[in-house]
Structure formats: C-alpha cells, structure tokens
Image 1 (cartoon, rainbow, N blue to C red):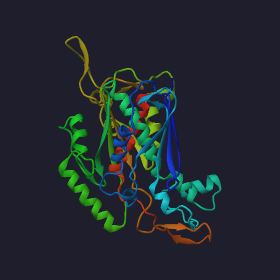
Image 2 (image 1 turned 90 degrees about the vertical axis):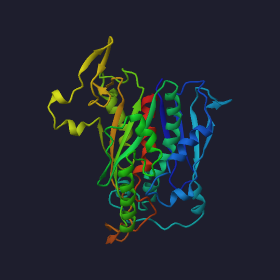
Image 3 (image 1 turned 120 degrees about the horizontal axis):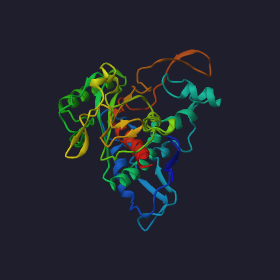
Length: 349
C-alpha cells in the first residue's frame, strides 16, 4: 500500500489539517508523541512574532482507536490561535506582490485581484501540518531502528566545521543549539549574524543537512524514473517553501574530483561487504546502499523583508515599495524539523 498525505488550511484560517493514508494498523500513537515534534518547529534564533502566538498542538480526529492506528486514514488538526485576531475583521486587499514570494505568480495563475488567497496558502505556516504527519512517520521508522534528524551547517556566510563529528553526535548537539548547529563556535557566529540582520531589516538563508541512520539497502529502484529514491526525496524536500537546491552527499564538491576519488570502494571485512567512505550520500542507482542517507538543502533568504523592495501595486498600476508583513528574519533553524518530516514521509512509504 502507498503511504500518502494531504494538507489543507490557510495561514490565518481556523486550522491546518492533514490526512495520512496508508499507515499500518496497530501502531501505538498519541497526540503527545506528535506534539513533541510540533514543539521543535517554532524554536530557533531569527524566529518572528507569529511563533509567540502559536502554541501548536494536534487533535487526532480519525484513524486511531484505543491508542493504536486502525489502518484507516489518520486525520490530524492543528488550530491556528492567531485566527482569533483576524476573525470577523475587515481586511484590506493585499495588492503589492513581494518579490520572491508566491504573491504575483499566484495572482497570475488563479486570477486573484487580492493576493491574500495566494499568500495564505503558500505560507510556510502550512508546514506545521507536515511536521505532524512526519512525526507519525518518524515514530513508525523508529520501530525499524531508523532515525531521521537534521542540523544547520551554514547561515549566510557562516559555515560550520563538522568533519570529525559522527552523524549521531551531530544530531544530539544540534538540539542543544538555538540555531540547531552542532559546531558551538559557528553557532555563536550565526546568532550574532542573525541579530545583525534583524537590525538591518533583512533576511538570511542557509544550508541544512538531513540524515537518516539505520536504513537497509534496497529502498527505491532504478526501474522507473519517478521511483528513483533521489527523485522521490527531491520532490518532497523541494516542495518546502524557500528550499531551492539539494545535493546527496557532497555532490557539488564531487564534481571537482576525478571518479577514482569520488566513488566509494567496496571491500570485504570479516566476510561482509563494506564501503570506504560515503561520497554517494547513501544512494547508488536510485537505491539506498545501507549507508547513512545524507542530504544537503539550500534555503534562500525568505521574501518578506522589513526593508522595502521595489514592486508594483496591481490595483493602481504604479511602481511602489513592498509593505512589511510579519515574518521570520532567519527561518533556517526552524526548517530542520520540516525537512526531517518530509524525509520521514518518503522513507516510511
């Protein structure tokens, strides 16, 4: 059976919902388990005011009885507490598209005169529903000894140095960091850079590494293009707002090396096949190798900036400056649980 999920809801609507279909029956599941993951999503330096309003908790509306999944679709709901501040109020049309956001593209595609329907659904607020669904998948994967985690390796021009640190230790140290970076020295510089960009009225992007430990070999296939594991993971992770690039293992660094220094030698060790290194990032031919899956995701600086940017008012047809709407200054640390969730959804399927 295929594991699939859908989300619905708007940023300032009553609630976000997710339906996760295809879970096996008999998996112990509680709202508290999902809420632990939801609590991770708002955390991190560079977070905007919205996260001081929302205290995300999930309601399980279907698919669980007596504390276990039934095999029926799992229905989840997360209330938007900020909805109370918008409900019943006259909201002026939003007609000045922000460069880099879905505002203008959405207006062209759907014929909106008011940009709010586009920005409300395109908002990264929707990722709370993904984290809820992903929490269930991480829980399922843990039953098979598989761990999915992530950490920040760069914010702006600040780069972490992590080579000597084992992947499992990186995951542990990242959760103790306000920027989810396992390198304490780089983390301190990242915090300072974020504080600086807040003063500048600007935003920052960065690079996030997602890893999966304990994977068996053989997930995915080369038999069809859309079933190659890189293709499935790529589609899932690139669907996250502001994620603009991916690499598996050190893919871009590999392009500068000859093949004999890139591919991982196969050796025999006590009768077992082993690899020397993991330049492939845990994937060969669209199939997992049994080594750690390592994915690096590039997150652009988000589009909503306190400093105005040039735009055009679609109502008047005049060139104007963008108007600031509340947002993060650096969402990179907060994106880690979202990318973990999307990876877990693909792996669980």
